[in-house]
Image 1 (cartoon, rainbow, N blue to C red):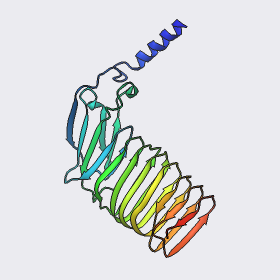
Image 2: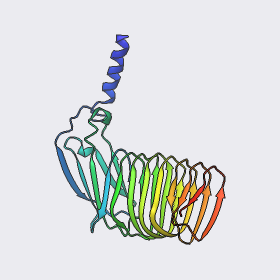
Image 3: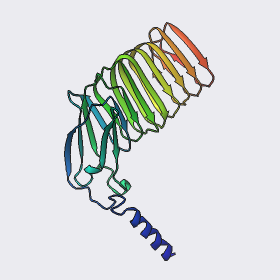
Image 4: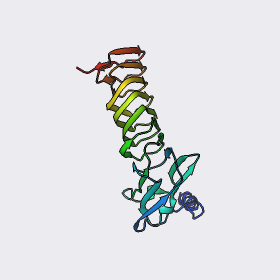
Length: 244
């Protein structure tokens, strides 16, 4: 038994060697790093990286993290897509309160898409003003909040229990949910709504002119305001709830 434990310990130490990561590095003092990056119109977010986005003239990223770990926060721009990831190893051994803080400033009239793959929350502090904007949760556990003003807004839950909370104004609102995530677009003014629901969660949205709903799951869709025209496909136990 002791031999087995010794072998397991050796394998663990080898996996956390300097060649593989920084398991035994201390956090260090909290420091700040500011970098200008190439122009981008989309963001891919991985791992537990809380992100705040604000209006800016230049494309700039600010990272606050431990001095011994900040170099492990990776950010690259390729084909106008900014990718953010945490390359530090064995993070489960470290204090979870010492999560990195990431802030981005960029022109919000050209931001087109944010794709979330991790557990970090995303907060857009100013109004996104691009013609079209897409938010996609791919297995995301984090919560995304945003304010939008433009022609079309697309809110999609593909997997994961995270939430998307949107406010603002758009001509056309698209909502897609095949996960256990929660979508609240009740504070988005829209003329037209196209919604596909394959979830057990309630979707909150509305439209003034027309709503096209496809309900395949057990989750309800609460419409407020109620549209003048409603086209409905019901193939699940979920129902449409119209506001009074």
